[in-house]
Image 1 (cartoon, rainbow, N blue to C red):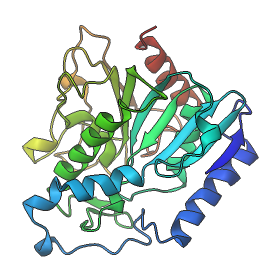
Image 2: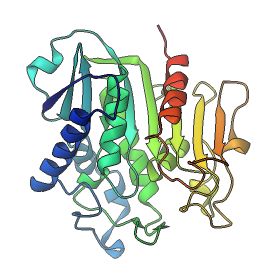
Image 3: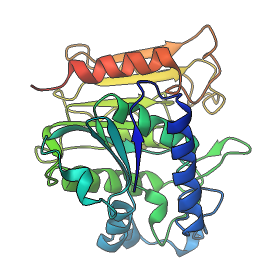
Image 4: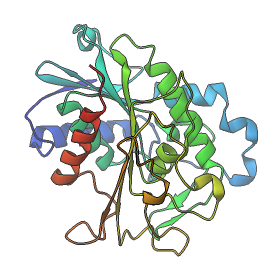
Length: 294
């Protein structure tokens, strides 16, 4: 695990270099956490038992990327590699459970984790690509998704497992847990159903419209106590099919502070990745802070 000084901005050279080194070291170690290195399982070899296998869930948890802000440093690594010094501060931290997209871990993942940590949130990002049996769910080169329909079920199991174990950690404030997902992770953030034990304070959906042909991909399954912030570009190149066009607005609970934001003009109008923009970061941070419990 490495440490990065907090400089107040995610664009700091030290932070970016540290993040890229973590990603590079993960590849060298055979982490296989992205499309570029993962050996995918053929769809025909997947079974229903694989989706919720305890062994597979443990792999995604142990490989989770972690950020822990500690005074003037941010500790970065994996859940299975937490040094003693990262835990000396006995504060319980508000925590983001971050869900990566269909391409797995990429440099943008680290940028997002650093952003949350530099603003006082611990971050745990379960690595679904750490499963030993995992089918390819998208082709980024041609922006085609849905290659294995049941991937969503696997991602939902991984998310619930991460929430469950995060709430048991000494450094996590179980009263302040937030679910944030990008792209396929955003679909997961929107659709996963929680209960009293797995509930979160609020959810953020980045790069998804809540519209889909498959019913289980459609809509929002957050409880009334879980406000949702959804962010999408009007011309998002991944979401231009007739069945994915639109926004999450029609599924929002208007009584609990939920909000759907569509970028229909300006530099973000055709972007899939939004949370590396300073104005979007400010919006998300304000939303999370508004739903923290003191």
